[in-house]
Image (cartoon, rainbow, N blue to C red; front, side, top):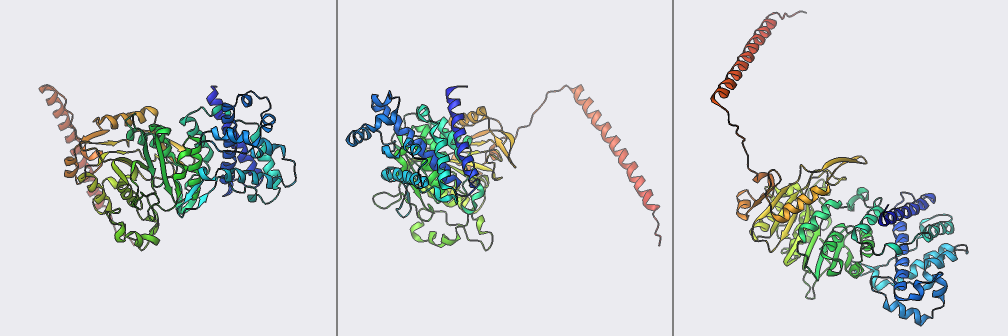
Length: 542
């Protein structure tokens, strides 16, 4: 086993151990379990990152056999000087709040209070950089009281958590890159980011979809100093992939999501992936009703790259009238979906997100948006108006229709619409519905793309290559003649295969056809005669 694979396994064991502690104290599958697991995991990560950075700066700490003893000999001024040299991606942790100090105090009375206060101290000391904003401007700090979620034996519970942390170290894996931490993050939140959340459920975007979106959006390796935005960010899978494709140090992340849980998970994702500088741009709030990110003149911010897998259907009837005001006419150019008398939870909110994204693009901006496949062929309504604007304004780069069940938790077929304000030429349409392998994931069926299939889609899209039964390259005028359809299948040529045969072979085939037909006709007449005779034999009896 390689070092990376070993560390990955060890990290997953740590996560499982923390979940086991929660289960032993009655918190298994509890609604608050994810808060405990993610916060304890993050505290450990920040603790080890701080120590790692200190050792890089000070050789005495790096070679110390007993790190804490050496650190205790430093004056407050010395520690302040060291802390000032640490990069902004690292949380500052006072020596008294290090994990080793917690471990030393685990047998004290009211240890749960000591544990909670330690985490609160770390949160307070890093409030300016590591807090997530709410729509109203409030700050959601890193940590909260954890022991309050346990009814009894709080000291023992906190002690058990600490004992799981001390025998593990992140120090050896801080040099790892995106793929490692993406895998760890997915494992960390796999039980907490599902469709069990009800009305505002978060759906985890499959890695294949996120990878394809990023690879088809970012085709220039010289991109630098750009902004990336997701108006329905969830836990940040799409943002992490595009940031990695651009370079974490070459972009700034912006997001908004109505879910406080998602915003907290996105913050964790940013910390793991060396994007701490963007945490201040993570906002918890309703993007459609009150978009947060604005320019100095009060107008909505324009972004270079936008990615989104928005909710498809959601009840927004409570504020639909607010959206229909004149101030929103430019943003929602195609209109607002009608509020039905029944099944309000089926309101097509994705059409609002799509309009918001188009409005939020910079002049040379690019976007990739997951939509229900029905959007690409709808003949009336908002969907048609949105497609028409994309074509009339020549701002569509292409569309990829994905295989069914690419999302295990929804049966809705999805497509990815790529918007590019600079694409004034041909458009690539891909029908990838026949790719992938179907597997069972729990009770659901899921389609999984192989690495080769993912690359086939990416290469076909970026090269604008026409491949039989997979892709077609069309002009904007072609799309207009097809009533603005974005479905690749409607542009595929119907091909008739011809086989050269001799006159003798033709005569033989026709003779065989004639003989077969005569036989079938004879059998049909015999059957007809038999049925008529049987009918004559029927008698009415009382």
